[in-house]
Image (tube, rainbow, N blue to C red; front, side, top):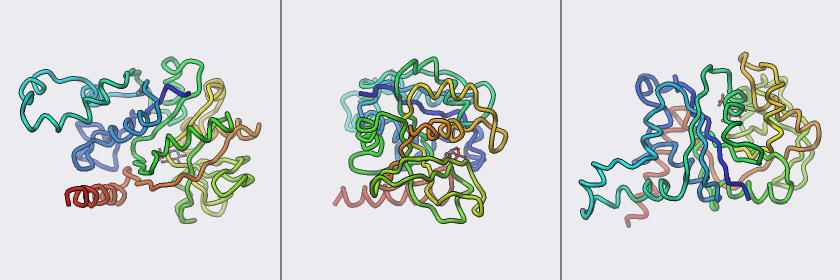
Length: 275
Ligand code: G1P
């Protein structure tokens, strides 16, 4: 059983400026729900009810989102509009929320290490809210099954066009079956000519807690930042990382194209649910 899920949400979201000038990118909505809520719903569906967020400056709206607004509750009580609060109320009741701040922007590895005090010494999930994933069951629930079997770190992967490998952490290794690969090589954002494959990590991880000590000893890599991919390479060298090709679909909501595709997907779903 894994109870905790970490959300690194300290990034600036410069690709969405000026929309992200005064609000966190994780609060941009796909229809009526902010991106971060989709991620927390996925964690909760996997039974990860302790939500740990690594935040930064300008991120207060996220904390407010996962809290009661009494005036609003009061105004909507007993009206038909009350049901619009249902999904977020459920998450507020069912989960606990802890926050810690990443003071310097030193990369995803550093953000995850900042969460060490909340996570403690147990395996945990990591969700990057920018990668909005849909699947049945949810991607984190699928990964939990993989963890239960292999008891090591798990990364969700999908094949990407070869020319795009420099946007991702790329893995290669020995296929166990169609969906599972025992990883031996992991490289953060390689140029296409140096990439070991086109199997890209998407923003879902289950990590064993030894990752924290490894991160403490991981020097800055690509972009001068501490990369989780580099820390995972240490585990992979010991045979302790499985790459899992998930069943479902990922929208890269850190890009305008992916954001619009996700919006269209959920809008179509809304229309078909209505009819
Ligand atoms: C991060 C990780 C990268 C991973 C990607 C998935 O990169 O460093 O390994 O493939 O998320 O979205 P970022 O998108 O933050 O540059």
